[in-house]
Image 1 (cartoon, rainbow, N blue to C red):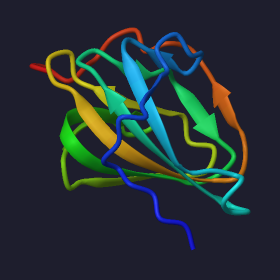
Image 2 (tube, one colour):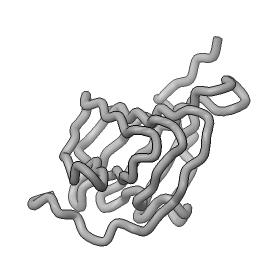
Image 3 (cartoon, rainbow, N blue to C red):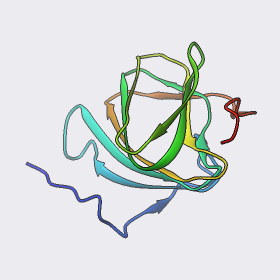
Image 4 (cartoon, rainbow, N blue to C red):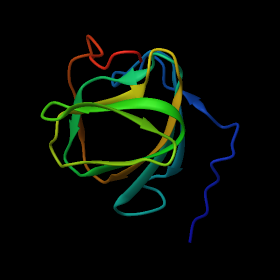
Length: 130
């Protein structure tokens, strides 16, 4: 058994990482040293922070735990999400997620073992008023 706390000061600055734009911090909850397949990462996006377009070799779940953000897929466009929402991206689905331009958002990413392909940055947010 492994118990991880989301109440932490152990945030790692991920700003400048290839998959993120804007100010982003993360805290690893479950990694490959703890489980064979499951990975969980608490990610905090400051206003304007987000991922680039990307895809995974596994399904990805997001549990929105704080704030208001945007999730988007190439096939379904953008959707505003808030604390309490749960999002699932299919294996190989091109997508991005992060804060709005004016509000921060924190989520828990539930991943499986596999790889992620980092694609182009998000050029424009299409959802009005965010």
